[in-house]
Length: 184
Image (cartoon, rainbow, N blue to C red):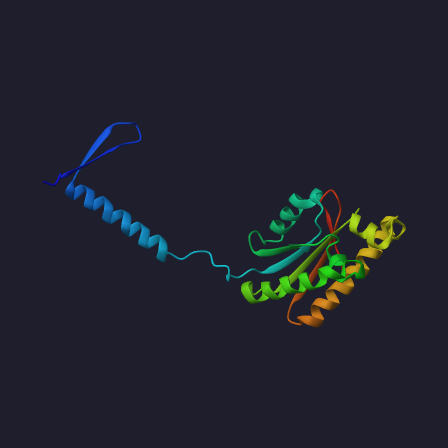
């Protein structure tokens, strides 16, 4: 003989008894919910992102970078590539093994997310610039700005040469999170 009731324990430890009809109704609802979730639209890896941001790996600026992108109206609408030195990491012979990695990331971002622009954010007091160019090359704020501007300008030229349709915006961030635009 078949038992016509299903017994289980609820979250308070109380025994709950379901009749066959109630059990079938709950099972049908559960199956329907599972099918709905399988068919429901989900965020796709091939969705659209407005920009790809290239920044340095410096841990001191992670929160400031996010705040900056949010202030630009790009919250959750950008891909992020991190290279020590940011622009310098993508163009300097000192880091030549990284160049292909950056350009492949950019190509994937274009194909998957249809990015329309590249935003590069270098920062002051960058250890990668000191390692690659020597501390004397960035010893004063003026020399530091000049070194970043040179790397950013080269970076922007390479982006435009490889992907003429992409816009490029460039910034130099101070350690307090303030930024200045670098003309490219």
